[in-house]
Amino acid sequence: MIKKLARSIREYKKASILAPIFVSAEVVIECFIPLVTAQLVRNIQNQCDILTIVKYGLILIALALASLSCGALSGNFAAVAACGFSKNLRHDMYSKIQGYSFANMDKFSTPGLVTRLTTDVSYVQMAYMMIIRTAVRCPLMLMFALTMAIVTSPKMSVAFAVIIPVLAVGLALIIKKAFPIFKKVFKKYDKLNESVQENVSGMRVVKSFVREDYEKKKFAKASDEVCQDFTRAEKILALNSPLMQFCFNVLMLLVCFFGSQLIITSSGADLDIAGFSTLLTYGAQILMSLMMLSMIIVMITMSLESANRIVEVLDEESSIKNPENPINEIADGSIVFDNVSFSYSEKAERQSLADINLTIASGETVGIIGGTGSGKTSLVQLIPRLYDVGQGSVKVGGVDVRDYDIETLRNQVAMVLQKNVLFSGTIKENLRWGNENATDEEMERICRLAQADEFIKTFPYGYDTNITQGGTNVSGGQKQRLCIARALLKKPKILILDDSTSAVDTKTDAIIRKAFAEEIPDTTKIIIAQRVSSVEHADKIIVLDGGKIESMGTHEELLCISPIYRGIYESQTKGAESDED
Image 1 (cartoon, one colour):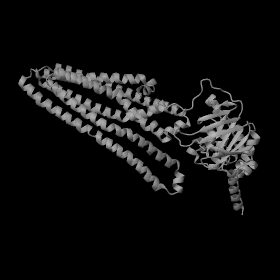
Image 2 (cartoon, one colour; image 1 turned 90 degrees about the horizontal axis):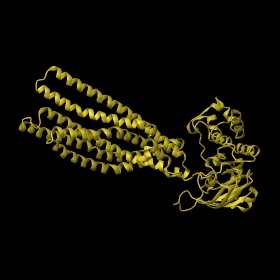
Image 3 (cartoon, rainbow, N blue to C red; image 1 turned 180 degrees about the horizontal axis):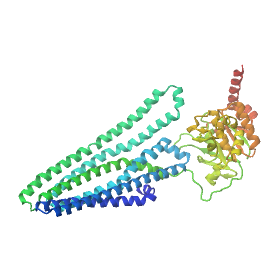
Image 4 (tube, one colour; image 1 turned 120 degrees about the vertical axis):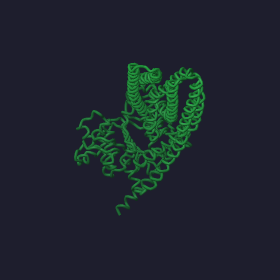
């Protein structure tokens, strides 16, 4: 885990090394200050002159300034190193996530990945800052102060030997109790983020069904669970402070009681007033170091589970990888499904697709129709390797898709998904996702094909109109047409429309299909639809039922041989006739 995380330090290694160096210098200087102070007190007791006092005073000022400078430099380098480390860590995680397959995304869930990129990285950042600064300072201060205390009075150092183990055992028990709670609470953070994400993204649905109170209760429940777990953990960790205070008071009591006795009984031979004050200072430094050390351990305890969750993301390997010698050219848009079976999980009770055998010639228009859960989307997602088949093979251009370079394959397969997504930015910027080098003229021509140019020109800024996040300032039909235009700009060999004209009227749908036939005749077009009118003119139509091909043929053939297709057609035709009446 440490090795994985350390790779994200990179250009901040220098700052990460300088921070502990300067904090070490700060500790050494601080430990010498009580010795100089004790020497000054002894000189004053011996009635020294003013020059001696000034000399020691200047030495103390110089040491204090040196300690201050080292501390400031250490803090500066620690801040730079920790913030830089977290920046690189987020970048590394985000880059890793970009290479994930859909199966990997399903494993972690979107809210879970958001929590890891934000909350978990913040905890690790704070822990790293403590490790390179405070975690260096405290043990060094503990060792130096303890050594100096032993040098000052070997007899009195027994008090430290009694208190330190008591404190160490107490802290170990606190951490042992708190760690399992922190491990559990981060999973509940994921649920909390999931509740927020669902509610915000589905706000229109929430309001239309007047479910605000239900969503508030659901969020409150998730929030309360996080609060309860954190409260339990904090209650345990809160014992840290009284334990420290108890040990500090006991130590001071022991030092004062036995120290004063030692001064009286030895007449200052074993311990004098100056040594006694020095011992008190070292005692305070030792206990402060232990207190800070306990805080570090608490912080590391909290961040350890975060670190594990981050490493899980960095360790995860995409289930879809490039072959050793990938093919970088696709001959044509022909597609062959050869005895294909597929399921989203190895533990799934039934397969999403089973025994699929299908051949699509390059340039053909193929319609896919079927009920909800029949496997329509699952089928087309295998073509650009968004998922890999469980059994059999999918071939594009006569080659198994697993033998292609992934980027080459996906550049030649344009998909307009069921859930259309537009990103914040101008219409032009969204369209150029399809082709970053597309000219304005080319974009306008493609938008005319997708029946988008007309409504774009009604906007005040035309193609420079800003799309809000998620495309909330355009209608569903407009969003679909923009996504179709974006896909067409890729000039793909295969175009897949996954129920992506459902929000446009039948007339516009027909115009779009006609434009496809005339403008991209060599492109293989796969149209998933709920409306028979969207696929009835296709070269062939595939009817899916329960993950299997129920029947396949033209519109006329299917009306004769497929009861499912005939039922869909009749229900829609009767519905249309009723509307006309």
